[in-house]
Amino acid sequence: MNTVIAFLTRAIVQAIPLLFGSTGEILTEKSGHLNLGIPGIMYVGGISGVIGSFLYEQSVGPENIQYLPAVLIPLCCCLLGSLCMGLIYSFLTVTLRANQNVTGLALTTFGTGFGNFFGGSLIKISGNDVPSITLTATSNMFCKKLPFAASLGPVGRLFFSYSFLAYAAVVIALVTSWILTGTRIGLNLRAVGENPATADAAGINVSRYKYAATCIGSMIAGLGGLFYVMDYAAGVWSNNAFGDRGWLAVALVIFSIWRPNVAILGSFLFGGLFIVHNYIPNLGVATQELIKMTPYVVTIIVLIFTSVRKRREDQPPASLGLSYFREER
Image (cartoon, rainbow, N blue to C red; front, side):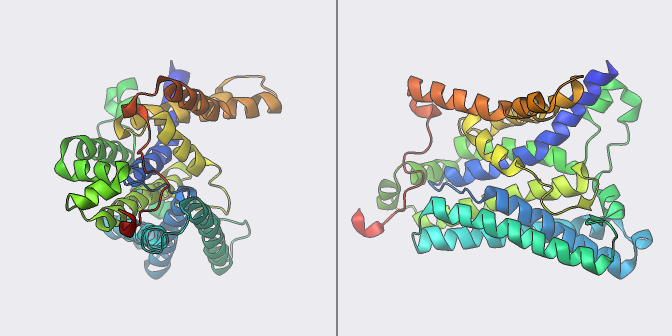
């Protein structure tokens, strides 16, 4: 029983960065923009939070940090860095109408290089013997759990033993789902993603909606990088340690058929599949790598299934990946 609880809790922690990334990407894609820069944006969100935390700890000392600034400074830095990435993508694809696929891949490359450059610089400044930065004091602030979790036994461990960002990821996904399906703003956004010319003719400011969806989606995705560093990695930053979680988040968008509420369960499934090989004894390296491929295989199956069924509600926005030229209405 303890092993099962340990596996489920670890799978949920593994799932949270994926949920942040997929929720942000779903919101962006609903506006008709395919942002393949999500892995780079999550990376920038993580390193931005690390920079803010590092400077704060260096200024006051790890033993003197206070809860509120220790949380707010990295959080604001993360959101600001992710917002800048979203603005760059929006300017290139909405204003300049650059190719969305190329722009997204360029942002991923840029974000990885940006994170590695500043991560390496902070490692040199800190003078560590190992190629990593450890922000244990800040991580402890982010990892504070609900005080009554320990008294509830297995139920407390499974449902109430996570940091505030984990619960925030679920709440953001549910709120995003409600906004997209139950509000006029969501209706307008989906109209922009389906047919921007018709939406424009109806008086909807297409560029404003595209900018807003992309920038807010980027900020949500950036929180996934911050959660990974401060919670999952216990405040340790190492260059290139993020792995392929950004791409898993993009795959989760397809798996969840562009629905943030479905992405919650999908992220937990992907998180479990990503680590299940650690709980199966006597597995060879080749078998472990095959198991790690499972989320992508499942995504391909879902993509084939939805393509065969051809149900409109299970398809991506009709104008996804296409630039909008108002002059061609």
